[in-house]
Structures are given as C-alpha cells and as structure tokens.
Length: 117
Image 1 (cartoon, rainbow, N blue to C red):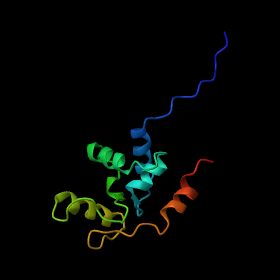
Image 2 (image 1 turned 90 degrees about the horizontal axis):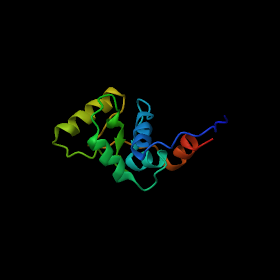
Image 3 (image 1 turned 180 degrees about the horizontal axis):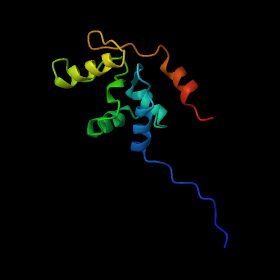
Image 4 (image 1 turned 135 degrees about the horizontal axis):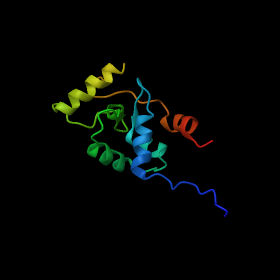
C-alpha cells in the first residue's frame, strides 16, 4: 500500500503568535505588530494583544511585547505595569517613563530575521 507524505496542517494563528513571542530573545523587545508579522498575520496586532491577555503560561516572555511606539500597554499605576518594568529590567532592558526603545527599523529587521528561507 502506498502512503502519501502528507504535510502536517499549519499551526493555528494562536500557536504561531505564541511561537513568535517565545522567540524574542532576552534583552530585546518587539511590538505587537512585529509579532503579528512574524507569525504571518500582518495587521493583526490586536489579536496578539488579545492572546497575550488570555495567556496563563508563566514562562511566556509577555513582558517583551510593547505598543508600536515602545510604550507599555498597562496604565502606569497598575500592578501589571510595575511587573512588566521589573521583568524588562531583569532582562537588561531599561524602561524610561513607561517606554522602551524599539529597534530602529523593525520592519527591515523582521524581514532579515524572520523571512522564510
């Protein structure tokens, strides 16, 4: 009997987003939009935020994901804001006034690092 070499079905958008978040190295940050692009879902930054908001995996480096202008998405007086700042500092990233500098040209960096080969 012949069997076909079947490709496994593509992973779900949520799995692709979580994989892109997990791939952000310690000491680096990315925007919600950059994560969406890395997951093959350009324009879906809000989906990234929603998935992060529903996630309960303590090992997920959620703190490395920021708004497109480098700001932390939580209100400054919230415990989540304080925790994200603490985790970023532990990674060697220093937030200033609730903001972190994103890579200069995130799009070009994404294209170089994450494009299919």
